[in-house]
Amino acid sequence: MKYCLCILLTLLSCGRILAQEDSLMVRIAEIEIHPAYLEQYTAILKEEARASLELEPGVISLFPIFQKEHPTKVRILEIYASRKAYESHLRSPHFLKYKTSTQAMVTSLQLIDMQALDPATMPILFRKLTGRKE
Image (cartoon, rainbow, N blue to C red; front, side, top):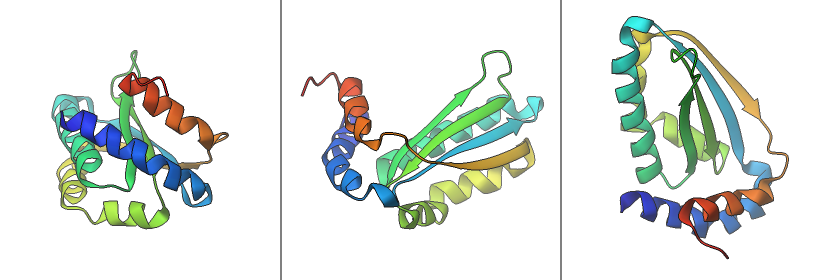
């Protein structure tokens, strides 16, 4: 239920976000994890990503994925409503907990700023996730 509410709130804010698409912040985090810590790291990351989406209106996407052939290579699609929303995220208790508790588990971290080719497709993506046709 919380997941659906989060998506609904995101959909409602998409119009406002797209109107300010120049301020939209998109990035890919490329992270490599020490194999001995993989299970522990993924549990902490799942908790942090969920909390960010549920508690922070400016966090549009914090979507962790990993390579099938190399599960220690994690990527996170991060989308924030603005730079200010990103900076607020960095100060959130759940992010600070994630950062301090996983620091020794991470062998490599690269943050790559991205630019959306067509931000207008974002509402379509969220509608598809919720099964809405309009």
